Length: 268
Image (cartoon, rainbow, N blue to C red; front, side, top):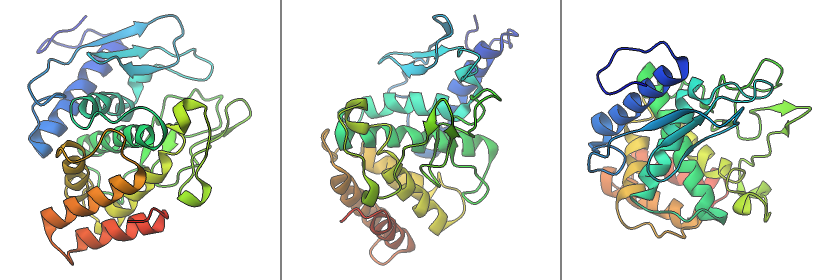
C-alpha cells in the first residue's frame, strides 16, 4: 500500500504503520547506532488489516503484522506507537540476545520490548522521563473499556481494571511474582518487575530515558554476554556490569541501577 518515500495513502492503519516503522528505525539508528532491527539494514515490512477483527499485533520473525481490533475491546493496533516499537523490539532481541520465550527469560524478552517501545514513543515526542506516560498501548482500548493501556512501566498492575478484562495482573516486585504455567510461564505478567526497574533508573537519573538508562539496557541486550535463558538476577547483574563499564563505579548511573533492582527485590 505504501513504499519507502511515498506520500501518505489515506489508510490510517497503513500510514500509522509506515510512520511507526520509521520512528522505530530512527531511534535505533540515531541513539544506539544500530542499522535497523538486525543491525545489518533489514528492510522493515508490515502487513495491516490482518485477519478479521484481529485483536493483536506481532513480529513474526521477519516482519510486522497488525490487526484492526474487534471494535469492542480493541481498536486498530497501529494507533499506538509504543505497540509498534514493542513488537519491533522483539526482532532486536531475536537478532541479539535471543532470549527464550518462557519463564523469567520470556518475561525479560517482553520487558525489553516494553522498554524500547516506550523509548520510541518518548523519543519521537521529545519527552523527558518525568513527562512521559510510561504506558504501553495507550489509545488502543475502545471507550467501553475501563483502562488506560495494556501495561504501565511506572506502576505495573494499574493499567486497567475492567469488568470483562479483569484487573491488570502485573506485579511490581518479586514480593508478588506470579508463578503460573499459563502465558509461557507468565511472560506478559512478570515483565512488570524488570519494567519497573528500568523506570526507576530513568526516574532517578532524570532527563531523557533513551540516554543513560537506554544505553545501559541496550548494551546489556546486545553486548553478547546475556545468556538466552537469563533469569531476572542474571539480567540485573548484567545491567549493573554495563553501567559500571559505561559510567564507572560510584557513578549516579551505576548507583541508580543497583537501587532499582533492590527496590523491586531482585538480588544482585
